[in-house]
Image 1 (tube, rainbow, N blue to C red):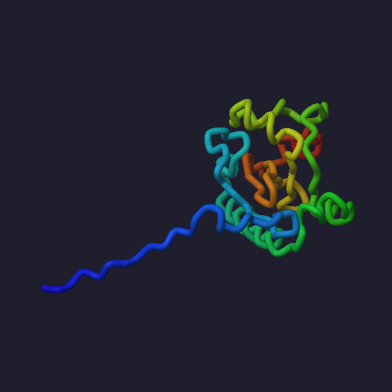
Image 2: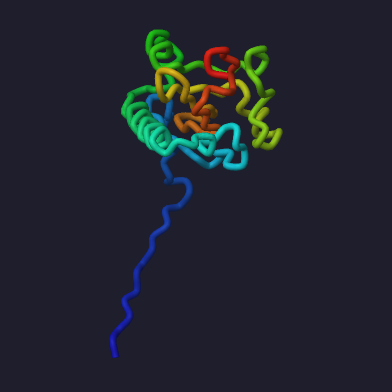
Amino acid sequence: MSKKKHIKISNKPSNEIQAIPSTINKKIIFSFEYLDTKNSKYSMSQISDNRISLQFHNEFFKVLKDYSQEENFRKKIREDGRYRDRHHIHEIDWNDKQIKESNFTCLNSKLMEQVKDDCWQLGINATTFRIHGFFIENVFYIVWLDPFHQLYHMKKYN
């Protein structure tokens, strides 16, 4: 009969737990926790051509990886206009008349109220593909995938 090994688990008292340092200088982390999978308008399901779909998926993951390599991503997008322009990054102003939605309709109203002033569009490719979401510290919560640039009215694409 074998002896069972007892593993001793040590829990630090709460007064010894280190506070999490400010995350403002950390690299961006992407979360899909609030991804709206029920909204076909803002999803990859609109892409019917398999070749284009594969291209968009490849671009999506490549750009997310590139963004996640940037030091101080939030600071960079707030202060570096050329970087923002090159990557089609900007804050979402829900009062802008070119926007086709009033907010992230999939979020509960309390959360939307909390994040409404830190919602952003991040470009995935040079022409149409964008993602929309919000920041909480250095985490970007992706809410909508917008492969055909539908959130903002653009005659060329819509």
